[in-house]
Amino acid sequence: MAIRHDHWRERNVLVTGVTGFLGGWLVKELLERRARIVALIRDDAPDSFFEREGLANGVAIVHGSLADQSLLRRTLSEYDIATVFHLAAQAIVSVAQTDPIGTLETNVAGTWNVLEAARHSQVREVVVASSNKAYGPSSDLPCAETHPLEGVYPFDVSKSCVDLVCRMYAVSYGLPVCVTRCGNLFGGGDPNYSRLIPGVIRATHRGERFVIRTDGQFTRDFLYVRDAVAAHLLLAEAMAGDPTLRGEPFNFSLELRITVLEVVEQVLRLMKRTDLTPIIQNIATDEIRHQSLASDKARQVLGWSAQFTMEHGLTEAIEWYTQALKGDAPPKLNGFASL
Image (cartoon, rainbow, N blue to C red; front, side):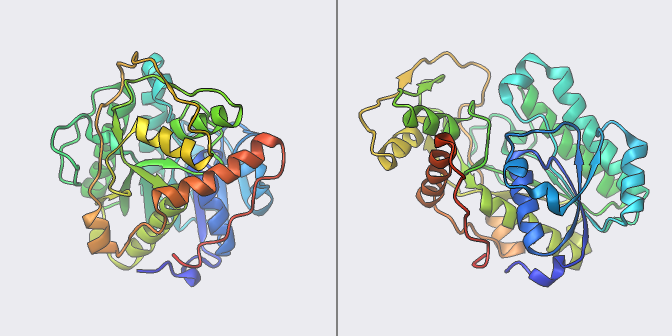
């Protein structure tokens, strides 16, 4: 199923989390589709993809917090919002470990505030970004959408709760909400260098050996950010045409099982710096050891498939960060015409 360009033309769309990694890319694509975008922003983020690309010039900005229920209701009403993409979250695992209450308040309470506001509006579709970590640790991999939600660590638990809250609003109130669970997102424009791929690219660019906090054998599943954008748009379009999708979760990933060490080695190879062998610290204790997703449901129900391989995505990401770290304008990537 291809993205329908005409579906988004002059459609009123609210996006939360626009200064986040996925949010900025989603806004960029919606602008190309001529959507009318309202962005809820709590704090300015000059280093974000949203700011660096000058995307604020094309959207209506509402400054405020997810905790402000009256603001959310007023925004949905005044802008006659048809589609909501709720992407705002505290998404840093290490921050969640040190501030579990703040993470739960942002991720869980923030979500129910958005959904409660939507319940009292004429919103037609709500797409909520959850996470592959909502499943928690599992020996039964890859996880399909039927896998129980068993988060253990603070960030994981927050996302397990988000999924259950969405299901509650769908079943109890008939709210047209669906949930996305993506593999680890990567690509240019993520300013958080504590994440694996931005971190190793920056270290390599500096001629430094990258430090791996684990033993390097943790496995992860990935998804290029442009594929994630396409997935969210496609899901919202499908919801508009099929009300039976209400309450459904969908996995989106490359369906890989690749170790952290293998990812680092692949980046080093692409950057032609295999001499910079990583340092293995083996000190991390607060993360799921193995994760992978099955995306069969997205293929069968939505007709979705990833358009970017891991190597293709890494190549684009390396190009983007290399230019950004030099202080040059990052490259302008082609649009989504093939998706």
